[in-house]
Length: 367
Ligand SMILES: Cc1ncc(COP(=O)(O)O)c(C=O)c1O
Image (cartoon, rainbow, N blue to C red):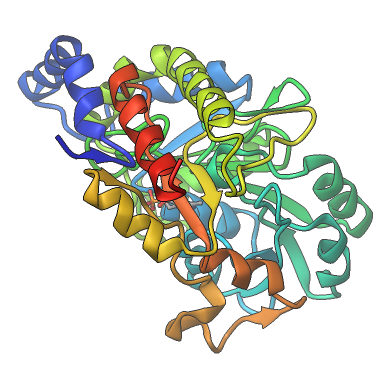
């Protein structure tokens, strides 16, 4: 049986009865949008994070775009983020009308380089979007210090880091706004697309509520020009089943990462570092190997399907060769794109599957 780097079906099967019940409840209710399931999930997710407001939207990309627009960021403004991320981070900035300004990442932790960050900010900068990549919190002390000094907003991209912590606070609550994706493979994943914007700022949350549905005020008058980005009731009901299990799932991911750490320790590959003071929730377990393509091929021959996150940095993709500004050299990012390998990582991985994966990785090095 093939072992994939992520397996959302395994999670469905692990909780099938309660997920089926939740889905049936929605289907039979006749209410499929803007109902009690979304409202309840918003309350439950806000309570989980310990934040005042949570607003459900249609995807993580929309969460970022609407958060930026709710902070009044658009044409003529610059937003600083990384190029070593899902293209969605940068796409959302561009779609909001602002110019993405990209900086390099740290080789060990894969998140924004705090030294390069400072020099990336200029008079047009309105926000920093730190990405908690692979489940590892960015250095939020550095990000928030620079943002405070320069008077810019911090909009956290938490798409890969549900439940991760920085100094005992959950990511999404450290900056001005937090944006989550519930894409099926995420640590908290729906069975389709969904996303969430969280904030302690009432005005920002209200603007996102307005923007997610035609720019409507509570009387359904369009007071802003807005499209539509609703989370649907089915996805909310599914997420309500999974949210109470998130901490246990993350604990299992952390235990699996510890197992990789121990069992791969003698091999000449680079394992991911965990920043002091951070709770890394291992959305992905990403190692670095110079002969990356040979390793992926070798693993596939042993029925282990590793992933690559990402094959190209955002600034290397044709749509983003213009319209962005590179604020630092990208040597770490460009080195990573040729070396990263995402080994299988999801809570339902069994001990037997871990034995097969570790055996396949070791045999690549003839061990
Ligand atoms: C870091 C990051 N940001 C944003 C997104 C966008 O989320 P979605 O796919 O729900 O639009 C993703 C997920 O693909 C992601 O990994």
